[in-house]
Length: 57
View 1 (cartoon, one colour):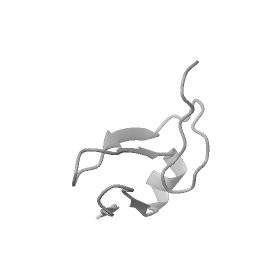
View 2 (cartoon, helix red, strand yellow):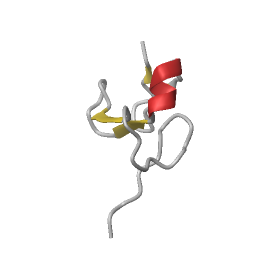
View 3 (cartoon, helix red, strand yellow):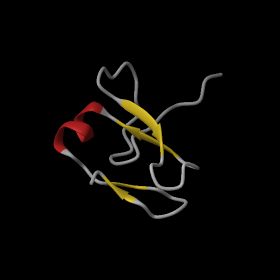
């Protein structure tokens, strides 16, 4: 079974969300950051649970 993905900012489940993104933390590279298209559009903040890095900058 495939792991469900949730937006790091709003916690919404990501299902067929065109414009969503997934990347490793730009600071520590240890945590996967997942962003839904709406949070990317409005520039919602996210926080890495490993190093407390906050973005977007």
